[in-house]
Amino acid sequence: MSTNVELLKVEVELPVFQTMWTERLDEFKQIILDHKKEFPNSYTDSNVNASWRSAWNLHQVDPKFDPIAKYFQDLAESVGNQYFHTNGMFDVINMWAMTYGPKEGTKYHSHFPSCLSVIFYIDVEDNAAPICIGNSCRPVENGLVLIFDASIPHWVPDDGDGKRIVLAANLDFVPSQIRGTWKAY
Image (tube, rainbow, N blue to C red):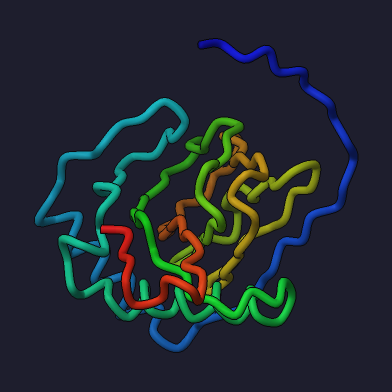
């Protein structure tokens, strides 16, 4: 049965949260490069133009990424509790790594139906392309972590000359009523 749905558009401002995590960048860079060496085949998709992308379930297949997945979950819970009063947990639904060369980027896209998206810049050259979220573009730097509503469209222009190594993830909310009884994978 088909339902007739009408699209209405409203203008709202949505937050993008940022922090820095610089303590273990060299270690994380090496973990990504080692993973890339072990799994050199790049996964392709329609919106990422990167020289290499890992599988979507990086956090499930390589335990070396557990500290990063835990950090993403803790960060999401902190944002949820502080700004949205959620009092719940967030689970990493998928996580992937990418290495970008010069003139590589991503097309305009979102990560709906996930709740939150996280981007972590591990190793960024000075002349790397910015990240554009909504109508705003922001330069990227080593250790930058961005977390935002997964339905917000974002992209990376393919006109930058610098290389970058990036980790990204999507997280979903686990309400307190089902905490301990549900897992995304």
